[in-house]
Image (cartoon, rainbow, N blue to C red; front, top):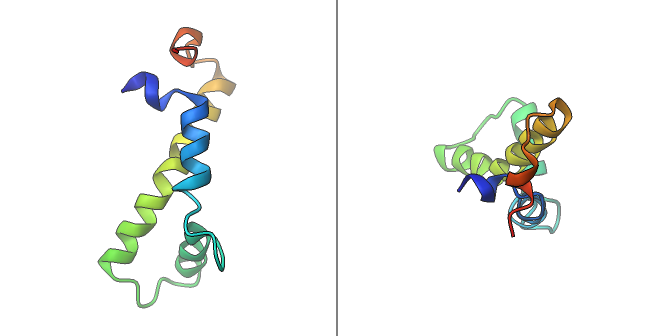
Length: 81
């Protein structure tokens, strides 16, 4: 599991697919972020779950970037084939 969430290719693919789907008329996560920034009026529990579900890939990507910049990402964990 740890090798999977530290795999750059997997996390980027997850972010670009699940993190942005559906793509039309705008990425779903972007619409949720705008809704929350506007005060989140009318958001039900399902909308919050949807926001978390589409946001997890982006959190994993940001986590990988921070670990890489701080030098805490082990090279052998990244290069697992």
